[in-house]
Length: 303
Image (cartoon, rainbow, N blue to C red; front, side, top):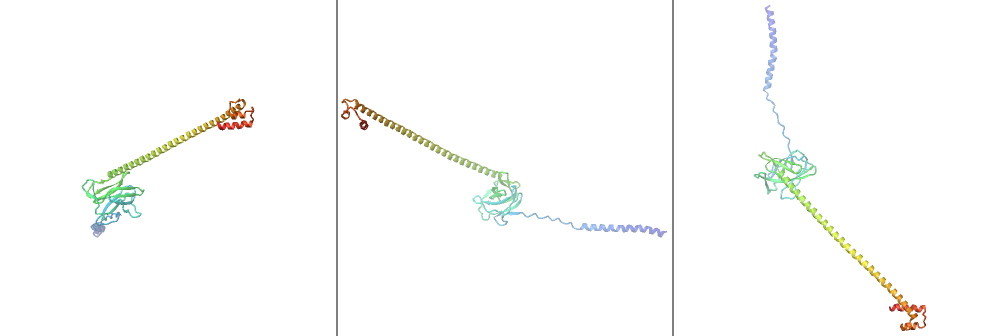
């Protein structure tokens, strides 16, 4: 009985030990896993920004972080100094364009211009080299940024308000941004006023020329009309003279006829009061028709 009782007691105890062993082993494995160092998260490198111009760390080369906030791609970027008339070469490579909202690093080499004039910043305490930049947009719009800072510029954005294009930038160590919008609007308004004045002057000159031409034409027409009137009067006078001449000729003929009649009457009724020529002619008392005709012609010649 005792042996059987002991066996019954040992069987459950052995089973309990066997069940407990895997559990202990599992705990030991868990502890070893906790002792392993955690994997470090490696940050991905930021994508390298594209460049505008030739990248260089040489003296006299300025680098500016620029963002295109015009809403359109920029296809050309050139620059010049205030004392220059011609714009330089395009800083963008052939076929390249500065996309809208894109950020790039712009390099400007001023090593050949150590005499570049510095301009005062808005607060008047900092001077820095500045250039004028001309941009061409994808739609063909060309805009001038009359003051484009280069030195100590933390970041710069090219913007537009729908009328003018300007830059807004932040200098190193500063928190407030500086904008050239007001300056660009002033320049734009001055150009508009100048264009309006030039247009008004051109229109005034054109009107003056038109008035002068109209006056000359009117004077020419008046002179031509006066000359035509004088010519008509002369013709009328000539016609009148002609009429008078015809009347005189007719009168002469009438006189001739009267003379003829007088001679005829003299031949038939004169008793010695007529001239000797008439008397000798009419001595017979009768006159033939041919003789009367001769008398008529001679009378006409004398009278």
